[in-house]
Image (cartoon, rainbow, N blue to C red; front, side, top):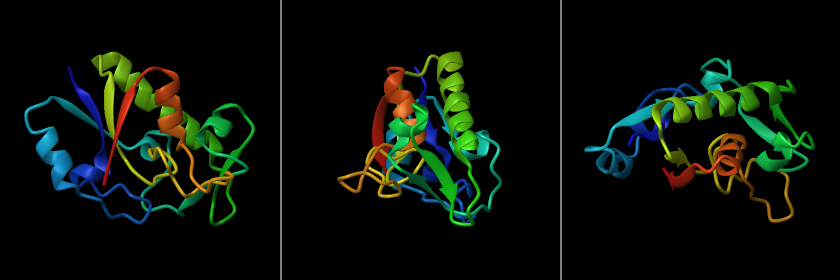
Length: 143
């Protein structure tokens, strides 16, 4: 069964600044496993490079519930791009039968405990991570 993997962890230059977060541990894990690289922000329609973004007034769960927004540091509301990226990433999971994902930690899209949000603890779910959890996709954090 394939696994979805944050493309930046594989060395794909899709981070907001045009770089990657290659993670040798992730590459070893998927060495003998079919995988599908994803970048939710690109799948949602954002360019690379792009301004970094933060979740305002909550975390990814709140974004999906309509109670928070994702704003780039330039002041652009990019909420719809983040939601679309989560939906498109999930579409790839459904089409491929993937039930697991290895996602980049600390990301406002992929993180299980991203600091790029406004919560009481200072950490929260990224938008795609929240979407995956809501739809039964197991997440392993890496990078």
